[in-house]
Length: 162
Image (cartoon, rainbow, N blue to C red; front, top):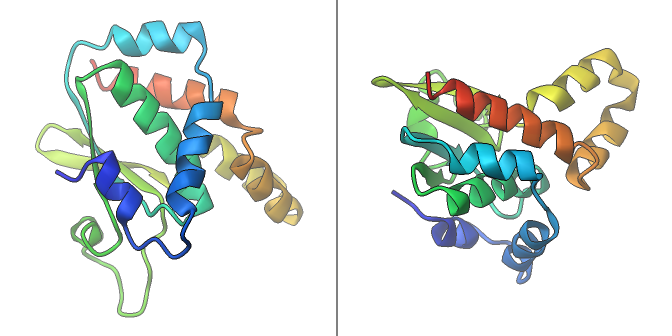
């Protein structure tokens, strides 16, 4: 299992990329409701996070994973890069790249993809407003969707407890 520290070292292309991730994590504050819900998770949750620190979309997603796993040691995150996460994309055609971040949750013996490049709330906005794709992507990256993303992830994590 690769750790958060391993993730920080995956193919860093600029000297300060890992520091960007750490600054983002420091800035994001979870709601009291989220902290309580995450701390009360009793069943282990295993997440595979295919992400790379140079990717601004990954930095947004990983922030929540790191904060959740810091709050509750039952939340296990296995960080992978595109190469080590390729097994989760058996039908990938030659030359095709894995979209990152891609997040999978273990459900029984299988893994379920629940986040592919963008969270559901951002994808829905992009589908409704395709002309605003770049603005929505930018707003996602700078945290304008964080409250909705936090809510979406908590809801999903709690669904894994059933």
